[in-house]
Amino acid sequence: MGIFVVLFCKAQQIFPLNTALNDIPANAYIKDSNNELAPYTGIFRANFQGKDITLYITKIENKLQKSSQKNYYSDVLDIKYIVKNSSGIVLQDTKNNNISQIDLFSIGTKPYDNSAIFFYSGTNCSVGWGKIILKKINATQLSWEYRPNDIILDSSKCPSGTDINIYLPETKGLIFTKQ
Image (tube, rainbow, N blue to C red; front, side, top):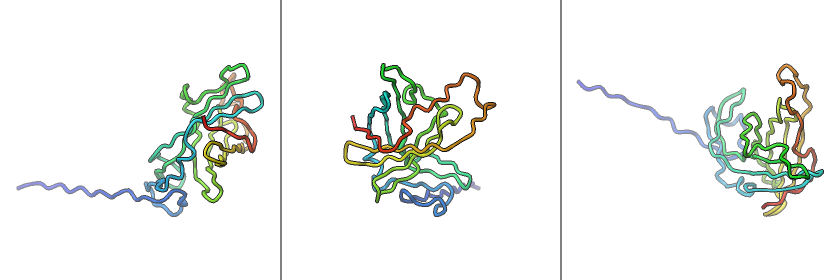
C-alpha cells in the first residue's frame, strides 16, 4: 500500500503596475511588466539651501506590501539618500547607515504625467512623513516635490535627544541631475 501526497500550488496572480488595490486579490503580484520604473533608477544629486542631497534609486522586485485590507507584492522604487551640509558633513545617511525605520519607496506611477509617487515614513519618530513626487523631465533630470503631512509628535515614543530634523528638501520643483 503506497501513500500518495498531492500538493496543490496556486500560481501567484500577476497584475500590471498601478492596478488598484481593490482590484487585486490577497498575495497578488503587481509587476512592472512595461518597465515604467527604469527611467527613475540611478544616482541623482541636487543642492538646496546649502545642503547637498544625493538620491540612490533602485528597483526592488516582488516587495511584500502590507495594508489594512490585504497583503500583496509589487515592484517598487526604493530611495536611499545622503544629505550633507555645505561643509561636507553628513547630516543624514540612509544608504550606508541602514537606518531601518526610515522608508522611502514608490506607491505608484502616473505615466501620463511622467511621475512616480513615493511614500516617505519620515525621519526619526515619523517626523515629516508624507508623499514625495518625482517627475521625469528628461533622461537625466527629475523634478522633486515633497509634501510632508502634519503630525503631532508623541514624545513618549521618541526618546529625549533624538534627532527629529527633516533633512530632505521640503520644496517643489527642485531639479535632481543624474550622476
